[in-house]
Length: 434
Ligand code: URA
Image (cartoon, rainbow, N blue to C red):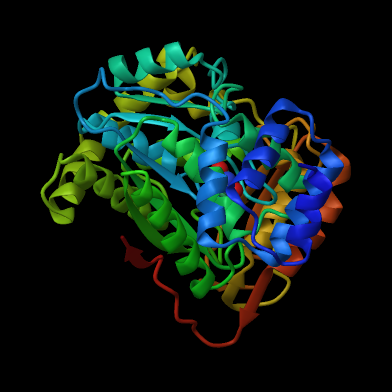
């Protein structure tokens, strides 16, 4: 078998066989296929798509490119959640400890930033000392002991995804249903979970720009999960404007801590409660969503979610002082206010543009080996629907590299749109599929 022939076949729109997909993924994992051929096949799939059978085979091959954890030592249900990627999406940081504080076991393997979207692992690494690279044995022990652990992909878990993820990120091949499905599901199925809550983002800041594509992605992921004997719930949520106010790694951790303290922006708090309530329901820790929400609200009020977050951070080597006192997070050398040039109602805050602006400030990677600047990012002061007056502060940007200031301000100018009349805001939670 030759990679060249597989690329040519897909380029011409012909369905690949299970053997061809297996051959390709084995070559990705072993390193025998060079980046240029991987990129070509990625682009061919991006344009030609994959059938359900091909997507299932791709997911299976990526899953078995590494180890699959056995968490049978934990008798309770193991549940995870995953977002398909958004801007300002820090829901995992609050929802997972809240669910864990209500007795749900959460073995989570999360991703880094991809394109203009942030990643849970980059965010957690803004906590001094926090280790996202536990060995799988340490990870298992941490889940058994604390009920929750969040780590990045190790060389042992879905290593094929690790390489493909990095190449997709720099070859404009992220927004593809078979790739998003196989990337997320291979990691999730390797964790030894029983069920999964998916947050499928829709809108300008998401990889799925419209509801039809988001629904298609949700259905594909649900079917792949079902095929592997896992229950999957998919919640479609709006990503036309950034979630919450903070975009950037430590800034987002601070906002998640606010939510765990019963504060924080309303949209982040709402989605946190909804996501963790689903986790409770799937774990059998609540009999209905209403009861699940009630338990989560109680866990926020009693600060037991916050306590669980601290336990997780301490268990993974992190300094918990920053949780009690977020001003201890390293801060950016510079900040600059972005003010309104006109007045009226905000009709849109383009999440993709804000994500790209934050990425340029250093919160994300432009090149695969770029180092993240954990302090860089943007704090919005307004949301869609808010009324603004001329010169009113719309956002503050935080950065360490002065050359980033002017281009970022330009990007933000194009991110905000205004109108004269009051605007209707869209619901955050669009629909639930299972
Ligand atoms: N998160 C992932 O882990 N993979 C994707 O492709 C998108 C979001």
